[in-house]
Image (cartoon, rainbow, N blue to C red; front, side, top):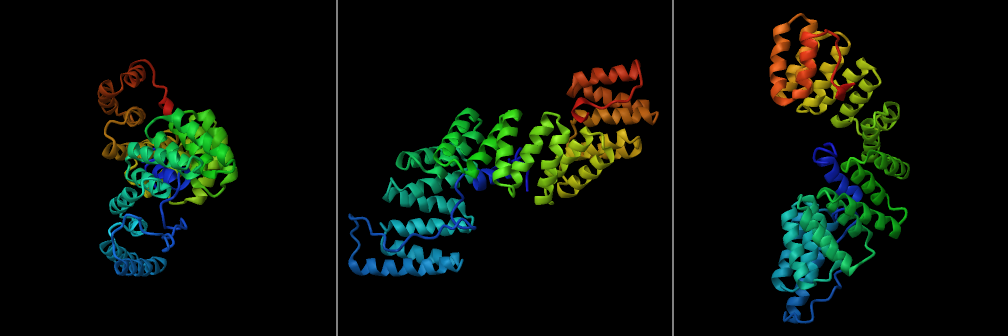
Length: 380
């Protein structure tokens, strides 16, 4: 799993696909190909024999779909289309099969063909919005969700999907309004509450996020994202005691999430429980080896525990992943000073002059005015 702030990467991409908007067909969503009695378009010129053959292929495809044999279902749907090029339902079901195979571009093309045959098909517009959101094409996703709402104004899935797309586009006020409208339509919408939680976090409105995330956590206690974001919001507000329970709950629900472990480490650090902080950061590096911030946390924890050599090793691991980390350079300088390695500290000072002059000034004071060991504000 990825952090909601990295993808929301994958966590907000996943969060938006799974919590804040209508899921794509299949993969547990309960979507199945539509009833085969859907009529052909009136203008279709396909002869009656071809129509019957196409319907037979559609039925065969649906049977394969029910058995999760999507490749054979696709073959049958394509045969139906070759026999009846205006067969809306064959294109629609073909899109469903591609979605379950996670072949989203192919699904997009199939749904576009279906939309050409019926431009008011709300389900097709909704799925096209979901697909483009999944592909990271948020402007296009917003277009399709908006079009769906013109056809079906009370579609809770389209309303949440539109809000999720706007949130990813940085249009936080519009996203909040759309999620709020979803809640007005369906007051018990857990997707809308989770979306408001996520949107407020992305907008750095931590007090608001706490309010929404607490409600979402009560309504959806098994949803990792809302516990994680609730903890992150409290962490950003430096309310460490309040951040700890939701982050521990997120870790219980998703023990393989390195970003949750990293946030736990920051919380323990804020509580001055430095050994527990180091342990959480270490778990984070095992789960997310590329997470330089976690190595910085390990080094900062060791610095507070007066394990200066171990701190140096950790900061050097940070530089392999994030060579310009100001916190790591600052804290490495502090560790070097404690080890009597003044040249090492001066080297870090020279680097900081280029990447963070404010921290460089703080380090200058420690080098030439006093030797009090502290850590940068981000790790207090």
